[in-house]
Length: 140
Image (cartoon, helix red, strand yellow):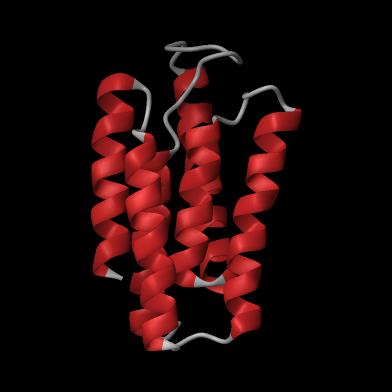
């Protein structure tokens, strides 16, 4: 779990600074996540597969939407799915999407942006994963 948060924090900093995430970051943390899964075996293969499928769906959305959803964001969802498995990753991504939507409404209401204003997704994914872990720890 610590490695996922290191990935998300590093990716968030890069996303906010340069609007891009280094490919090497995905490779290192993706491979580390797979290795951690194999060694720990704390999730079922089915749950792990659903985590990867979630990421693949987001990659497909990125391709189909002609990068309205950035490929880096989609790959970040894939890495998150590798670390958390399907159910936890889906909840974390849902929380991130809801926070992004709320932030977008605020930006629109304050007239600081419009419908085509691009937002970095990784800060919201970091917040979604944090919220997911807080909920899990509190057994809610």
